[in-house]
Image (cartoon, rainbow, N blue to C red; front, top):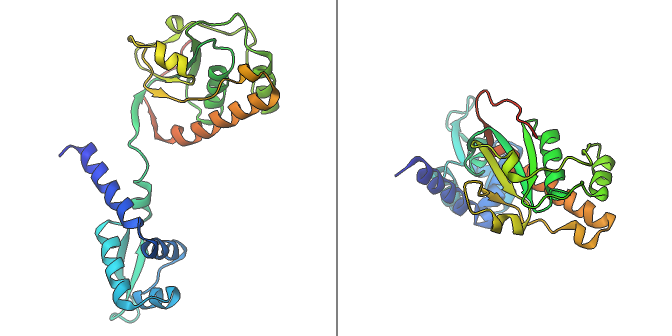
Length: 233
């Protein structure tokens, strides 16, 4: 079994262990502090034999460990293993030199995504379009400014002029995802609605919030390539 499959298997066991409400309640209790099985049974108003069963499942999944009391050596305490919960995150995307966000016109979503990524992930980012517009949309510039970011109003680019071999390409629109089928094919696809269609401040704010939330989820699993310098945007 490969490392990836073993990781998926381990994560599946953890998810299965957490799928029972009683076991999830035990994990919630142990998140706050260690406890003996008897204390858990009392706090959750559950029979001790049922607690023993659930603790066995949680232990086999790697979520819970037992420690002997330093006081009364006949007593054991349960503690949560937080690293097991951390393992539920997807495997990292390693060796990424730069993240390039692509949409059709490179006038809104890809521009905002690159600015957000640079600001929050602190790693190199760029943006491009399959049919770039002459200028960045004024509402994109405005929403960026409202959130403390800066966009170059005339800084649009074509995919062919931006993408490098070690770039992680993320399509932030459906059209770019479906059009790019060659060497510059996106590795990730974020189906973010086009705010230009509605052309309102609310639509651009919604796109900004959508992109920000996706970046918060994805940035922690990106492992930059060693010695990856800044590329031309």
